[in-house]
Each structure stands twice: as C-alpha cells, then as structure tokens.
Image 1 (tube, rainbow, N blue to C red):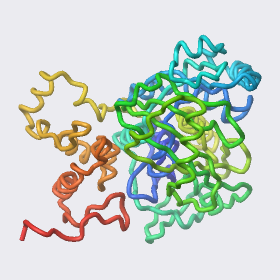
Image 2 (image 1 turned 135 degrees about the vertical axis):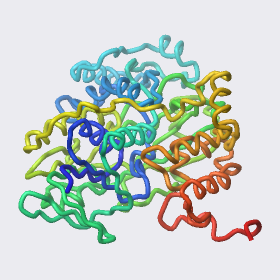
Image 3 (image 1 turned 90 degrees about the horizontal axis):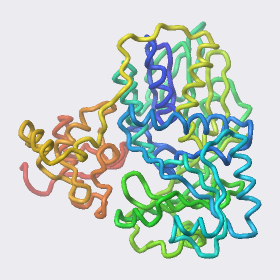
Length: 476
C-alpha cells in the first residue's frame, strides 16, 4: 500500500516526486516506458522561460514566473547544468507593437529584467541577427537547462529519499475501494494508493477518464528540431525567438547548456499521440523560419534531428485540479518545463487540502552529485580518481570524452538505466558528432556486464528496440 501514486515520470511528475519525498510517506512513480523522461520531457526546447508570454492571471503565467525564479536553486541542489543566458523576442518594424505588448504583459506578470531594445542595441549584442529586424524584447532572466537531466536528477533524488519507481507500468485501470485506489497495469500488476497524482502528459486525459473525469481533452502538437555540432554553440549567445502566435513561441535558435546549437520547433497538431517522426516539410520550415531571425545558421553542421510532442489541453491553460483524492495535471505544454518546480509546490498544497498528512523527514536529502562532475575536475583531480578506479581513465565515447567509469557509475545510480538511450541521457555518451557510431557497441557490453544480462537482451529504448540478435564472432 502506497500513500501516493504519481502516474508519469516526466519533468512534472519528477519534480512532484522530489517535493513530496521530504514527507514520511510511501510514494511510487508509475511510468509506462522503459525509463523516465520519455515523453515531452525527452524532446523539447530546454528553455526556462521568463514568463512574459502567458496571459495575465493564468496558471501558465503564475507558475512560469514562480518556477523560473525557483529553477536556479533547484538545479544547483540537483547538480544539473543551468545557464541564465537571456532571451530575445525579435520583430520587424511592423511588429513593434507586439513586442511592446509582450513587455507590458511581462511587467503585469511580475517578470523582472525586461526591456525593449531598438535596432542598434539589438544588433550590438547579437551580430548574427537578420539586419532587417528593428526591435526586440530582452528577457534577462530567461535560461537554458537540460530537461531530461533535470528529470533524472529529480526522480533519482526522490528515490534516494525512499520513493519507488515502477517502469513499464502502463496504467489501464483505476478502481476506488473505500478510501484507497487500486491501479492496474496492462501486464496485470496492481498497486494500491490513498492518493493519485495524474502527471501522464499526452495521456493525462485517458488517465483522468479512468478516475471519472472526462471534461477535457489533450491532443499532440508535433515539434521538429535540428541539433547542430558544438562548434556552432556560440553562434548566438541568447535564445532567439520571433513574436509568438497562437501555436506557440515559434521557431527559436538557441545555444544549449551542453554547447550545441538548437533550431526548432515546428508546431503541427496531429491525432497520433505516438507519432514522433520527422518530416521533410518540417525541416524546410525550420530552414525558412530560422533564416528570418538569424543569418547564416550553419545547418550543414546538423548532427541529429528529432521530434517532440507537446500535450495541448482543450482549455488554453494548464489544467490543474483536485477531486476525491485525485490530483490531475493536464495540458502542461510550454512553459511546462519552466513551471515544473512551482507546479510541484502547488500540488503539495492541493494534496494537503485533500487530506494528506505526514511528518517531514529529519533525514531528507535535498542535494545530488552532478552526473557530469568528473568532466569538470582538474587533471590532477581526475588522476586521483583514476588511481582508485582505472575505468575512469578509459575513454569510451570519444566525441564527448566519456569514460567507462562514468558509464558504470550512471548504470548504478538511481534511477538506473537499462538501455542504450538511458545511458546516453545520463552521460552524453553517443550525443556527439558520430551519434554513437563508435561507442554504442562498447556501452551495450558494459550494460550487459553490469546488469548480468545477455548481450542480445540490451535494447536501444526498451520494448522491441533490439540492437543485437546474436554475435558473429567471439564468445563461441
């Protein structure tokens, strides 16, 4: 019997789990995939928005501004890379009124560090911009982060504080028995919990329907991205947006916290909640729209492309409500990442109103060692670690300079990865120019060894994503 069951191990579910793990309560996180951060969290713009875009008085405005203020400290505690690089919403002369309206809305929302720049000021700080742009909103508090690194760290921190993670647990039934809920998975597993927190992203409406809540819907909005090589990471210093539309904040050009350059996303509403394919039409749109804002983006240096699916609710705002022991969070699209710490704070309040009561732990762990700590050490410090464990001296991923020691450490740290992409998200092995062409076979061998599992059983991302069917040489 659990006190709280959190359905969904994305950034929202992860931040909620971390926040609630400070209580002396039994918590489980249920995730239908083979790892955490596999939905919208896995593929998005990785921006901590300042909060000027959302409609005044909305959940989006309230939690974006508060979450943005919290994020730097959260990232510091969890050992997650975070950089306050600022953002520019650029416009042509006929869009000046829109830029000024965003400034006014941001002021009403309580955003700090906003100013409107003229043409000379704009091009002085970002020389690669389209020379026809004449104005911009500068948001100094906008930042960049890695969404899946944040989620892995938050859930790992929650697990370090006693929370349990159940993977491949696709919820197909919810029944209420007296004061508890019985939650049934597709594979027949069952758990019981006193409270349910529905943070199931694209499928939050389906989970809500299982609990008797059918007054909203969620659909998928496809967003395609291109990721450029690290040598392009300084092409812009700030995140560059154009004035937003009803479909979102538009196509951005932005550095990432890991030193790459990101272009995207497109915005196309689709019916299939699992269709994360990329398209020729999407790439053509990225090329066209990026060039409207930034001259000469070196798209010939793209090293990978991907698609993210945003969970768009039917109300135009975040859907957050509680009823009879169930807290529902749906339609948490952009600025969901930015809002996640504040949403978690609010869910804690809602849970108490629903009747949850527990003492706070005296031994709560609020911090976590950075996954990237080894790379940031001096050569002398690295050598001291290598003397104790020679695996830290063996480079496995040449592109990102990731060692066997780091990979082994990641495999044995909560939440433990069991597939190739899981190791990739935790260590960045396979994220460089060759995209895993060199290091993947070795990582599969390390996974099999550490998990005491057959080499052929290791998958790319769970399910049927088999990598190797059999060996052709060696090991008889």
